[in-house]
Length: 206
Image (tube, rainbow, N blue to C red):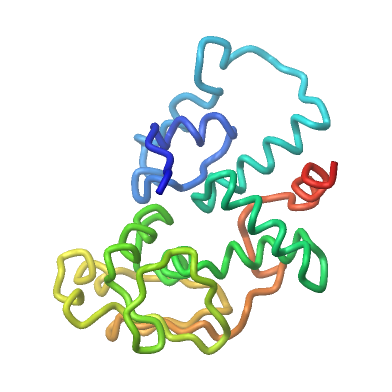
């Protein structure tokens, strides 16, 4: 499967804000965007006037990079969101938030979405008691996600037990059991990812 293999910090600098792709590094003084808050490349520091299309494109790129999707995956998800009842942009964000890898990240079981995707792919979690290894799986209200018994003794998850975890209102977590539950599907106002979804809808509607 295709995946981005370049420098993650370069993506944050290109979008002009932290995308939190490197876990703890993003909160430290080593964060690239804190040290060089301009776009990468030879002309990164040049002032550029952004067109309407450019704004829409950047917002789409930012959303893709926040959630770690490639173009085809993102486009397919948008098309599914457009077919659902309700507001397309909000549907898109909710579908991104309810991906299994994102929910694992939101539960505090991984320091970044990239790490969460890797942990899911390696089969460290169960969904409603069954082993699962598909990061793009869409979770539903009432779903229970738990670290597999065999994985709970690993240094990674022992570290999670010692951490103070803050989770969104639509999720509950029992850190001792390394188990989380999706209480409800998130509403738009409960999603704090800084994305102007209407710009993405405008881009794909052309």
